[in-house]
Length: 168
Image (cartoon, rainbow, N blue to C red):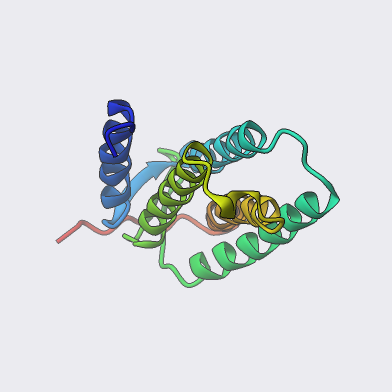
């Protein structure tokens, strides 16, 4: 593991911090619901096309399938949450949830494994299913974050303002 750049450890620590903070109830501006899906989209495209610059039809199909499954799961997961809305401040209070922590760590581990496999010339990286699986997994991570955040944004739009109770 001596060939791993030092900055990777700092990225891992920062991602751990972000993931842990998502495990606790928080109040955020509604605009912030765009950040994680956009970040996962950018990292997914960069990661996939950086490692696999010539996608084929099955890669696109796997990505679409992963995106649809992720959107459905993310939507379903967030639909049961009790949220509080402050329309004057443009904020929404969401419960703590370990899902985003799992997605962040899962995406880091997935990308790290792919990069390690490629750099170490592991034979499994050349196998035919690796590229479509990578496309599907990256799209699934994006779909999970987008599904939950679209659910929250639409509930914010459609729901009457609910007072935010004080944290105990």
